[in-house]
Length: 276
Image (tube, rainbow, N blue to C red; front, side, top):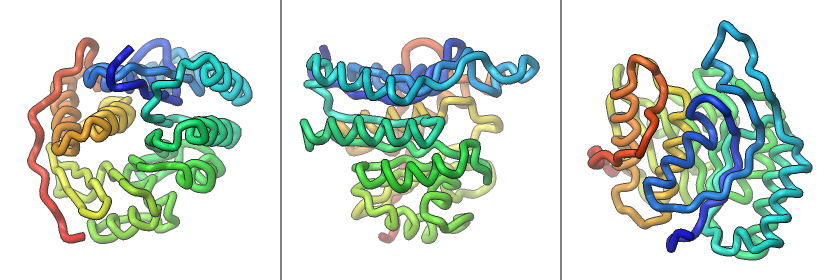
């Protein structure tokens, strides 16, 4: 058992590849956090991994079974040292509701648990989950969250503001979520660059090189790594998480996949404080 406590992760599971839980757990292990993982789906691979084979085998885990498993873990004491919950891919409104019930029960037992919502629902200008999933995240999960890690499109979707093209618009939209801390990935940046904003009482911005083809699982990995660094009170969490992700993407341009093996944390990239 880690002296730091455990992080309860609710997200997708693939058999082949490094997305969802299989991208999240290496990030948290690198920071010496124990993880307790609850899958929302079980798929043979990411849908984009083997396009010639069509949709991967597998499917969602029954939402009721998620609640049943979580209740058993709580009753068994397996989550007594839980310090944080991270939710990722939730395939249906029923799964969103199940996650909300689980988080509410955990917070009722331990109100100090930090809940990070990675509101996975779309990217590149389009939803890839049904609109009622995004609505459920907004209505059921964000009110329970202490922090969230939306990408730029997801932030526009969750706030009803649509396309966000300028940094001040992004900051204003993030504050509309009324959370203690919001991290916005894929924020506005010059061509060939990618920016991430960390927004609370202050606004910090980190800019790194953009990979020509971002590996699947990068969003999962970033949310977990950033959460772990924040829980550890790392003052350079934004720069470290951004630099590590950029380094991993640059080293895997040919395969467009996250690397296997231990995670090597990169020296922090430069972060700038913006007017808040």
